[in-house]
Length: 579
Image (cartoon, rainbow, N blue to C red; front, side, top):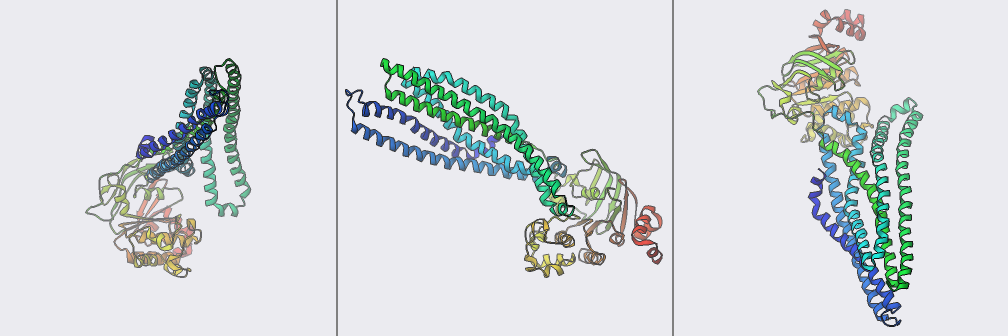
């Protein structure tokens, strides 16, 4: 699957490889020239012991030209390596993000936010480095290693055999170290997930941490996770710390053997001092190539471990499959639950046998104790989750038959936890309808009772909101979120306890303005307060995942004990007598 990304930029990789071969070729040519300079230019072995200065100058200039050409090839190699690696990483990161945007809520929960962030950033960076190192390092190492051995055999078969005796031992050492470190790299990335998750949680919840004086606890929790990460990293580094000296020792043993054999061979007339010098240079190049191979395998091992994690993300199939319905229907704003049951992936059953129908333009309030399934019920309408039994119909069509974008275009949702972005107030409201003009944004804010406080801000609607809306109060964030839902002008409006931070007067003014501005929209209000629900056309009371009663306020007050208990706890008996 990685090939899909590599082939797009294969021309860059091929050019990078070609320039790397050019750079290494220049490195391999130079020891031979140096051998000739020593033997013929300095010692004059072929001219009766008389040196040749002209030959030294000529070959020296030739070496300088080769060095410059090799440097140019190396620079161009770097350019094309980065062009291929960076573009591959860019495409991979975009594809991962697009994939995440298709995930259902349970899928995101299973991965975890910290893990998704790590895979999108650190893991893809490791894969990107792996590809770049492979294109640059593997070619350089391969050409330099086998080129050096070939040149050694050309100089002297004895020198070549000396190196070949050491070569298998070096490969064995490297293989053992790679095997031991491979599993550690996977563990390392998993531990990085944990560190990122803790960091994200603590930054997002810093106000709660300070309010509860839990700084020390969080420091210890982060320190523990970070210590485990560092310990794994140290184990990897220790493995390679032992490997490098062993490889160096074996290679320098080869150099010593070449010097010994070279001394004997020169005395016997089978080689020249220049040949020995060239053999040592080739051995040094071979050593550098193998040391580079050590680092290369370290990056490759880590890159492969990261690629496996990225591939799990890319290979994940969205759990919510799109239907074919484009959204055009005869009805507008009807919602129906037909024998709906729902359980979360962990097996916890939340809703059972729900039958409920809302006519276009009707306002329904959902009430019940915490955990009775109110939020789960409304989450089935925009298909944030799929039912485990029965069917949810919007405008007479099963939500599973809609294209998800077409379904959600019909629905606007305001949540209790208001999610705002680091943008202006106007831009946050316009998330509901990117094409909304200034007048529509202001009108939506007026309905949401937000226009008055926005107008008092330093730059009005252009005032920037801090990250996660931290510069606004809870009630202000909720009103901006409600304005974002209102500006969408959707057929169905869902308010999931989205007025919990508002005072009763502001909430009453909001619903009155909403009825006037959007009379034809179907409205579903998840409420904890009687005052929020009593003006609805009907109120559905949930208990243990079942609808136990549904009707207007007065009817439920007369017939439903659960609703009566809620009313009494909030309004009091005295208010009841005044009704």
